[in-house]
Image (tube, rainbow, N blue to C red; front, side):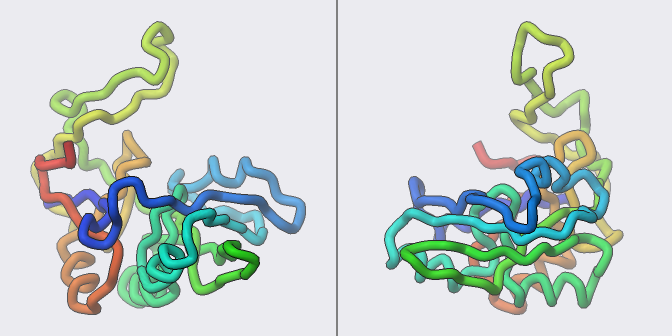
Amino acid sequence: MYYIIVPDEEFYNEGDDQLVPFGLAKGSSYKIFDQFDAGEKIAEECDLIFSFSGSKQLLDKYLTADFLLSNPALFSKRLVDLILMHSPNDIQALPVVIKSHGADYSGFFAINFMKRINCLDMEKSKFYRMLPSDNNSPLVLQRPVFLDGTFDDGLLGVADHAPSLKVASEKFIHIYRQEKMIGMDFWPNNKPPN
């Protein structure tokens, strides 16, 4: 069985502010963000900086989470260490600095998902073109339908034909919940969010 990684609705409220990429140091460009989730290591060393303009109270809440709403996904050091201990080839973790309310916060990592998983039934899943009149326009996944099978080779990955779809194994969910991590939830096979 395959599971989609989604924000935990009990932790995040609809309309909550997200963290956004703010800038980069060491001469990098924003093109580095195009390299995430392509199944290859990002070789460029840089300091990734994210900003948060929401309230200090909401920021304090977010800093307790292990999964932060962002693109790319941000994981806590605790979650990264756990993943690397069990399945070190699933992710690449790049340290970030979160800037908010005049202060810098560390301890979070931008996650490059390294594993691409052939898990989508391309005939049954619903897609649409980003630019409907252009047949070369990227496909956008509207409703995923998974192939029969299970994700047994590791903990985390992205759907091969839809890298924005983050996929977790049952083993990962068990470890995540056993460690009482915060911020992430999982949708079961063939029951994606509306």
